[in-house]
Amino acid sequence: MPGETVHVRYMVDDVEAAIAFYTTHFGFELLTDQAPAFADVQRGNLRLLLSGPQSSAARPMPDGRQPGPGGWNRIHLLVDDLAT
Image (cartoon, rainbow, N blue to C red; front, side):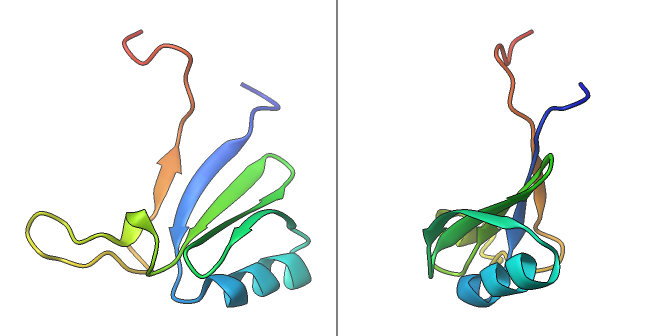
């Protein structure tokens, strides 16, 4: 899998601030800006999906817990055939 892009959803409190942080300090390139809900940035083979409080990723869990920055991050694996 060398050369494949890794997609990581990262919950943030402020999408615009996260865009500025990753593009200014770490050299990420902005791909999509739908702030305040969502943005994605990429550097090399790493794509960060920055999900803010207004994004669909921030919907409450079935037990009522509210996702937020910290332990709610996910790695996205893109596959051609999920069953395989």
